[in-house]
Length: 302
Image: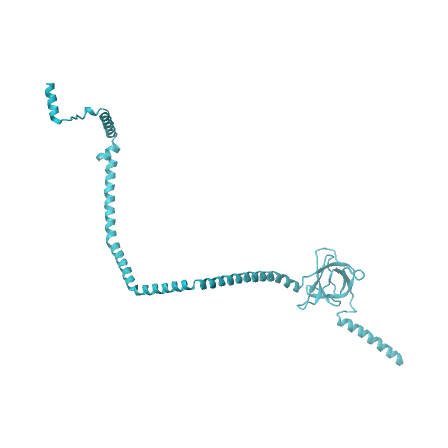
């Protein structure tokens, strides 16, 4: 069979176009020979997500982003479409999360399976979610540090101002009282010199006091302790006699009859003193002329 030149050129052109399309899609991660399942999710903001970015689950690539469009004409939430090329099933409550793929901020989609038993079907709209970016996390961590640093700077600034004011006041006080400070410093120097000159004398006084204390401890304390022991022994004997009823004090405390007799004697003595105050003439004879008067009176009586 003989082929014409035009037919060969046509077949070659078609094959070239097919290879070009396949190669282009292959370089973008698309496989035109694999059955695709398309899914969708809504987002208020895609944070730089682009078509062709991978879709992963647990870090394993299972598809890629196919389209990003407004759900309405030129405004409203964004509709992100993606296809799954791997034979993987996931539940209807699976979240489709936009996340940072690297430290440079490149975005991708990752699936976070839910807990429902019902599986999503191709064409379903899943739950869209956005992971906090690394930049936002750093910013949130940095804000408290920034606020604390600002407060610390304010405190340090206030402290430095207070130190500056105190320094100025101290300088002014030194300037005003310069002569007094100089005089006080001279007195301190003189006192220091006097102390150094009398240091040997002070050391002798301290040594004498130390020696006196040692002698006092060695001699008088033992003797004093013996005297205290003897006094306590004597006091103990006296208390034993009192408790046993010996002696006047013991009888007074222990003997009831003795107590009654003493009480009766005291009562009689009180009556006698009372009668002496009321009738002193019974007990005292007083005469202006002494004995002669008394003798003449006796003669006259006779």
